[in-house]
Length: 184
Ligand SMILES: [Fe+2]
Image (cartoon, rainbow, N blue to C red; front, side, top):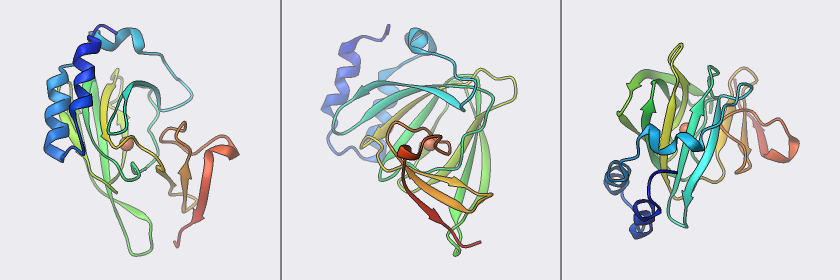
């Protein structure tokens, strides 16, 4: 990676960062597409290829290279985070939980290159690349994500997925830590 280890190491100075601390940190890293180009791989069968760039006990920094597939609605467990668009444009759909436990779409917003947006604790969202857009996104979360919930709204199911699974319904049984049926 072109970005120096020194600049990423500055993430070690964050302790229980606030929403604003995290935002400032993501901006200060000043990571651009060319800095992470060598880390990127493609994944046609999944919504994105994901590469962990840095992780300590407090934060994790990931880059995601998107295919044309939409990810599933999901939360980030007990983590909050900021997402920066390094290339292309992203369509981010935000949900609210209804009384029946099912997420319902609130709004969809497009974010273009260099824009950043917030993902709150317990917030549910889904993302996809704008059509024909080579979307690459940089994600800074605190604490590192664990116990992410992924929703299948057609089946009215939610699944807590293992940490190696992305924002899609798990292929493998072992990646399903807990599956629950929601009221419809
Ligand atoms: Fe997400």
